[in-house]
Image (cartoon, rainbow, N blue to C red; front, side, top):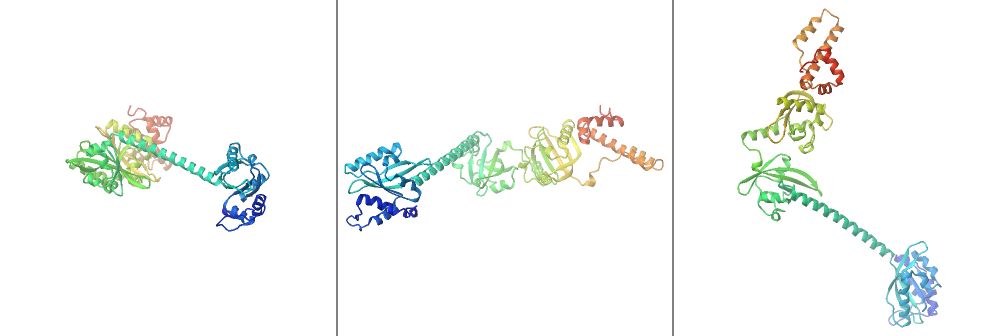
Length: 468
C-alpha cells in the first residue's frame, strides 16, 4: 500500500495546499523548509487520503491513493454530503473544536460508495494557520477485513473446541458407566493414558495416581508389547495382594498414536488354569485346523489362528461379531444344517463344503460341529482343509456298483452311462436328505433344486417317505 501512496498525485495535494497557503513555504522550528509540491509528496506517502477543508467543512483539495480515486469527486463539496449519517456529528464536533482554537481528536468516519458498501477512514485533524484543517486519513478497510477474518477464525476455533469437548464428555460418561475394568494404554511407552473407575477399584489405587503410570509398575507379568502381540487372547497378570487378573487387549489408532484398549477380568471370572486348560490353549493357537466358537445364531465369538489363516484375516477382531455363514460356500444353508444337526444330535461330523476367504479364495474343508453346554459360546466348529482329491462324494454302495457292473456286455454304453447317472443322482439326494435331517427345504437349497423338483426326484427314486 505504501507504494500506491507514493504514486498519489502530488499536484492535487499542492493545489489544495496552495488554496490555503497561497504557495508559501511551510516550516516549523527544527524542520526543513518544504515547498507545497514536496509537502504533497510527503503527505501522500504517509496517508491513504488527504483532504483540505475550510472552516465550514467544504473540501478544498483531495489527494487519494490509487484505491480511493472516488474521493477525488468530493472536491468542492461539503464534506458532510460525502459522509454517512452517523459520521456527520463527528465532523461537526471536529469543526467546532477548530473554531474554538483547539486540536480535534482523531475520528473514524464512514463514506458511502457509489457501488455499495462503505469506506471507513480514520482521520487526523491538523489545523491550518489561515483557518480550516488538513485531514490525513488512513483506510481502515484492510484492517476491518483482517479483523473480520480473525473473528471468523475465532468462531471456528470455538466451535471445534466445543465439538471436541462434547466428544470428550461423552467418552468420559461412557467410560465411567462401563462395569468392566478398562485401561487405555500407549502401545509404544506402556503407560496408562486413561482408565475407568472400575479399573481403579480393581487395582486398588486412586485413579489420579494410575494415570501416566507404567503398566509394569501397576501389574506384574505383563507388558504393552506382550498384550499387542497376543491381541484378542487373554494374558495373565498379577496385582498386589497376590491377586491375578486376565487382560485382553485390542489395538487402535487415535491422533497418530497406537493405543491399546485393555479389559481386565478378575481371576475368579477367568477359566481355571489347570494343565488341561493350558494344553487346550496351546492347541488352539498352534493347530493347523481352524477352531471357531459361535453363539446360538452362528455369530462368531472367537476364532483361532488356524481359521484366520484359512480366511486370510489379519486378526480375530475382523470377524468377531459376524455370522459364520459369510465364510461358508452355501452361506446360511450350510450354517443352518450344521446348527440344526449339532443341536439335535449333539454333533455333526465330516460336513463337506467350501470356505470363502476375504480375498475371494475358496478352500475345500470338512467341518465338525459340536453343541456346547453351559454358559458362553453355544457351538464349537473344527474346520480341516482337504485336498480336492479327498473331497469326493460318498462311495458308491455295493449293490449299486454291482448293478452297474452287471450291465457291461448286456447293454450299450449309452444306457449304462444313463443308469449310472441315475445312481449318482439318487445317492446325492439321499446324502442331502441325511445331512439336513430330512429337511426338504434345506436339502433343495443344498442341491440347487426347487422344492418341486426335489419332490419329483424323491418320488422317482422311492425316497419320498424316507425319514418320515
